[in-house]
Image 1 (cartoon, one colour):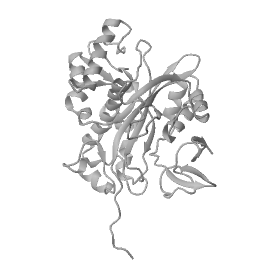
Image 2 (cartoon, rainbow, N blue to C red; image 1 turned 135 degrees about the horizontal axis):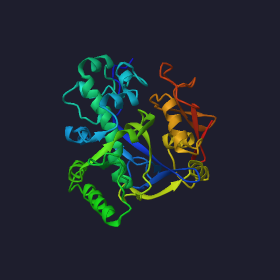
Image 3 (cartoon, rainbow, N blue to C red; image 1 turned 120 degrees about the vertical axis):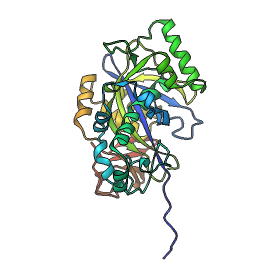
Image 4 (cartoon, rainbow, N blue to C red; image 1 turned 30 degrees about the vertical axis):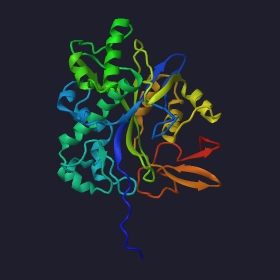
Length: 339
């Protein structure tokens, strides 16, 4: 018997992604095509999103949020039950390394004792991390899609910014360019433009974790939001090279024909949204369903690569909360389909 230590899986970094939706003849989702040079999901169609940054949890930025308290943010994503629950082979995705002063704010520690985290990390710290997830979703949506879920601090109606005026639109386009160039920061924009970020405009929808076999891993919360009608969404021409509004069913159809590359989390969430033709309908659905963390396992079954989700009889850990909907997604001729 070998005494070699078990190989520790790569760290899963906390991240958020936002399904930007709009209503017309039905619901449409804003999808971005990642550059083929990307080290993570190259050429895939995705929602705007990315890894949490330390500044997302800065006191100065968290002072500029409204609509949800830190406790409400934590409760909205089921955060308060997770530190005491081991998820998917021992990894507690939200028992964060806040228990360790030397841990990076944007990472999830694998093989951490969840009880130890619960004892050492204060509730306030955990709730602020949950709030940071919402903030990161707003920041990433602005950086990657050019949409800004924000209002002026002086606006008591909390109406989202109107960027239909070319002069006003250019002000924020300039901020976006300078943030990309790392000349200025999202916080500097918030202070300079006196912005407040309404966190209740974001609705938790799903929670996916990249499998441990992958070199790059993320622990990602998916949010829904209704895109402001008076803002124009555009890709950034950096991490993403194209973008378009698509009805979820149309996106899935194009994927099935091999014209649009999706990964399982995007495929499954598009399937869920495709059931609805109104914003009210999908938000009601999102508020009614459990949102357990989903870390797929992969098997070859009858010659096909199959993503096995929690709740399936073949999933390696029967103690993990089951995923909503079907538990198998198969790769056939380069595209995914639910079994």
